[in-house]
Length: 193
Image (tube, rainbow, N blue to C red; front, side):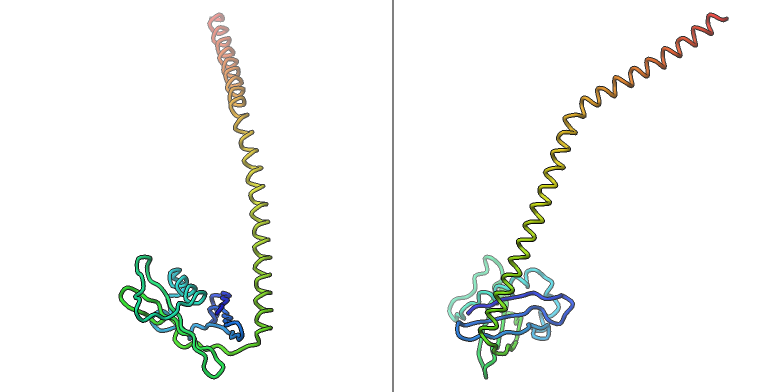
């Protein structure tokens, strides 16, 4: 089985659009907030819960009666899929050390045309590839800009010691000129008295 998860706007009742395939059949539809189980309904902004949900949807685990979950890496997630009357029924549980917690209880997805779904997935993939290409171009442009700024700053830093030396020389000359003028005034007053 294959699952595609497309996130949607956070303000919507729809969390994401799901497309599930078993090779011959396809089911698609939105995963809505009302599909979420009570204990976790308001905690989907937590990255750990989103990670668990994605793990359960993208790589559903086969149910195992004998093997307990491994908690060395933290909680895990499992999903079960069942087809009833042409609809796909999805249930997701998060498995914590303390015990399982229902995350999604019986979300239902209608059967859709496999060809149309594959075309939609291909369009989504192409759009994502285009977004990635644009982001890469933007990163390269930003990197080039930063490298140019770095070069300008390096040249500026190389020039600074000479500029500081020249500025100090000018200040000393100006100070000497002021001191000499003051000395001449004092001498002129002394000679006039």
